[in-house]
Image 1: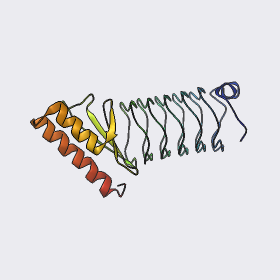
Image 2: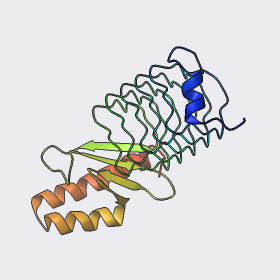
Image 3: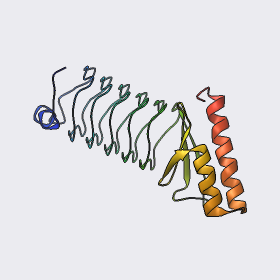
Length: 196
């Protein structure tokens, strides 16, 4: 695939032209606008999609393995059965996004916004809701990979670092014990799914 910049993508993509099923492995779509596009089954493995806009796009079954999707916008997108294995999703927006059956093994979710998403059947990720028990958000996410990584509000790190952060901020309180139990529960959920 020849080099294609975000500007090239903008010139060829008016929001109605389908890219569905296309093989765009390794392409450079930095800053591209794919809002409301049909990208069903597209292969973007290893692509650079930094800052790309996928607002309302259909990426059902898309392969985004090892892609750089930092600061990408997936608001209202359909990512059912998409594959984000080992992708960089740092600072990405997944607001009101359909992530049913999506794979997240080894993905980087540092500072990603996962508000009001549907993760039913998602793989490589476990989530627990902690009302009133937040470190900076009410959800605890764990992503399976070589090391299980946790996202809690703006925290992103491994299990040991999260446990240390909980004890540092909450001490030996009941809240700390419940948070530590939630970490254990998320680890068990990943193990039960064979993801850890």
